[in-house]
Length: 160
Image 1 (cartoon, rainbow, N blue to C red):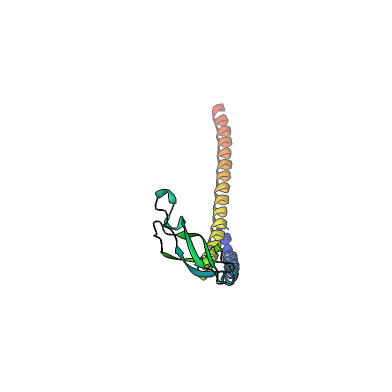
Image 2 (cartoon, one colour):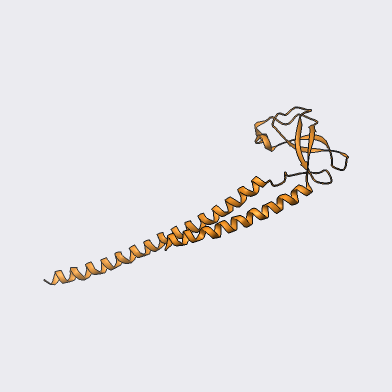
């Protein structure tokens, strides 16, 4: 029965993963229309201290040209220890403000597959926990029955 439930969950997981994938593709199309990739030039050296975080968590001041042609300045993601004048690729919105990179097709695939697998694992885990709980209750019931039977038999033996 549990195997049937776990196998029956596969189509639901695939369907849900496909829905997540389609939604993320819509997000990718919307992001692609709303963001632009530009090159920014660092105007100062990026931090190098260990407290600055991972290499991609470091931010440094830079300047870049916005899609409307105006020059912008601000803090952009950079590699730890990058020197002044280093060019980095950033994503900006229509006004030229720094934004996150758009969702990619690969990212949509990964998100969809992850959602489907996660749903299937959730169902399989719930079935496993349910089976374990049922087995525990059944074992306790059997043990209680054996205890009652031994008690009855011991009384019969005591009378003989």
